Image 1 (cartoon, one colour):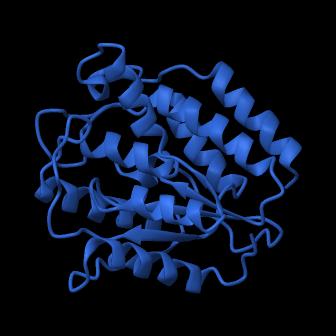
Image 2: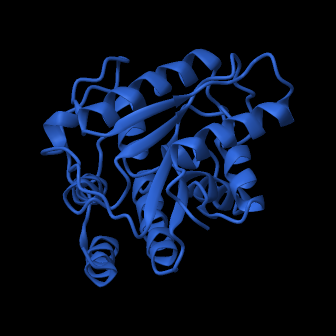
Image 3: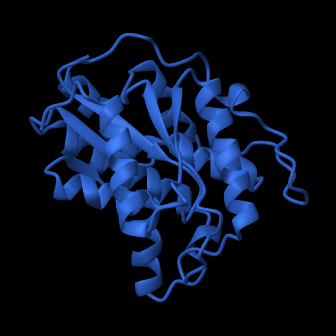
Length: 239
């Protein structure tokens, strides 16, 4: 698929879709709606070898951002986590608990789409994304929120149009989750999110490669080892 076609689709998503209600029960922690009920098919096996687009996923507080920064230092093109940018901008503007706002998911998808367009228009042969569109829909389903039509459509088209690489890197839990102003999850919740993400990526046909925490190493050494391990899987990439 040509980048021009991708661009038309993403701009269509950004500009046109509105929210669509789904049946969900927000009073318990059981995910009633599954991703298979919302998204049809699986990501194909065909691969764009000219530009690989790898997603890093995992629960909150597992070190994805640190690995992304390491890739940046090595000269690779990276895309920051859209949700974190939305949260930080909202908090800076005095909006409390932005993740509870009705338009939170759509703001994430808008920014993800814009960031995607900017990244794929480059000549980089390998791009690393801090989370993909399957992540926000997984969060929504776990929290029993109603995924918007825009979110569902973006996930569906990311599968149909093979917008990302089939290989996804799941950054495993560190054994703790440091809570901050923009990160309110406990470690148990982070582990639950990790399991849900793994399940949903598998359900949509992705190959999930787990990246361990290397608990015997100090933080800096662990980040480097995790980065090198990912690059070993991506040795076809040139930057």
